[in-house]
Image (cartoon, rainbow, N blue to C red; front, side, top):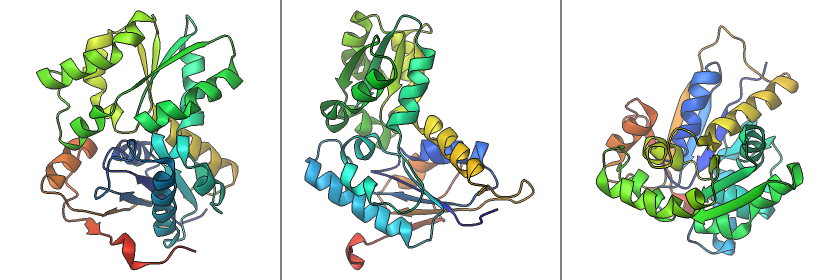
Length: 273
């Protein structure tokens, strides 16, 4: 048993989808979540900037002596390879587990990827899927506006603006007859009801946050680092900017009020190694 926390970070609040999965499937574990709300979104930034942000996010979590760190961020997982390679702790990104789940789920060997501009341009999911099954046809669409929809809580399936934006983005995937779509940003599962409404019940949606948590659980179990089943885990939440509607959005995404638990972090207050 290892009582050290699991560290999770994302560019904003979208990574709370991974936290929600940890609370459900790893209830005995402590969690430290960092949402970089002051610099969201990452997906439209340069590779150099994303690498820097990832290094700073990881450095912050390492101060808590985490037993495992998770990048609940498709952009970081796809682009910040140098930052990821230097992590000493067991590390989980979202691309590999989501790609494995999609390859297993597809029936017609046509998979779609919805991601940020940086994620799609990196080709990370295409490369990962081709390694698993070169016969699968993969198509990706850049969906930069979806992060803003989630961060502003426009996620209801009857929201006309959200529905129309999703329709525009997924049109090429529908045209390519995909039967599986990877929600390649942890913000996107919060829009799953909207996306499902647009693409129909016949298309399987892969939740990157959930798949990453299942990967983390397997790693911790394999290394005998899971906490005892009679222990109740705790969670600490940290953000780089407490936006005006933070409390409402976090409550909607996580299913509980964490407004009194969120701590402000000044990323300029410590030096990178």
